[in-house]
Length: 337
Image (cartoon, rainbow, N blue to C red; front, side, top):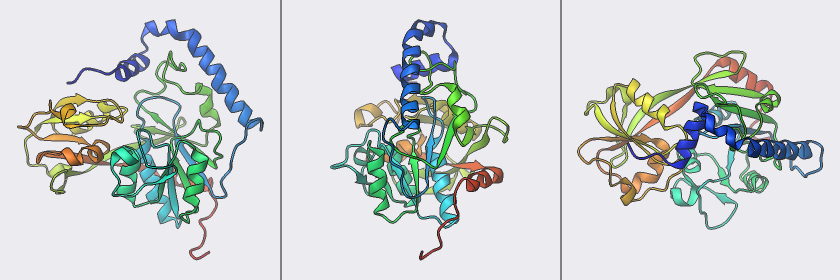
């Protein structure tokens, strides 16, 4: 396994409730004061907020570290399209370097141009998606594509953009860690912020409950990066001893999924949103299959060996969650309206 990055060490400390973090408490209190005051200014109208003319769903979190936002966004896109909505997505485009902003992502873009998560969403869903750190600018550009509902991938704390629904994702196992704000803990906003959001979804929970709706990530198919061959994960006939790599917010979740599918994994952890090159990936063994996440695969396609595969995953949510979501939205416009 590769050495842990500073990011991974911090995540381990936050969610492991390391005692030395109390040294950072004065900075944590200062951060908390600033973010609370900033939100209050938007709520009081002291700062300008732009409200789009169509419903907008923010899919965000109050913690650092992976919570499963991308599978949630994909689920929302596909579900809302079935309800009759013309859905579009906006994203900050972390790690993207487009020629101009705002940028309408196409399936043929590279991950370097579009960013890994936006490109994954576009390739999976064939949905209009615009990236721009200025989210109101991204939303305005997206409206030109004829969408009548916008999903913001992350952006809960981007209060310059008005929203109709706030959906927060939490990792069931990690929860809120030590419940402290940055830098002492993983919280972007105080834990009390959860009391004001519309929907809480807990990734990895076994059932809906008072603390939120359950989401499970279900293994889909294994796809060969070089040939495009697809097969159900349960029909794998190759070696069970594999190399598993992940450059995501919570790599352990991916490795646990592979182990549940009876793979024996030698693991390689990279930073979230890592930009891969041949030198970075040279340590991966050539004599055994390499399994990776779909998010990593969009960046590794041009570097892939014949025995590199990615595992797709799909979010599963309850009918109760779907019903609760629909109560927060108006009826979908009639086609042709």
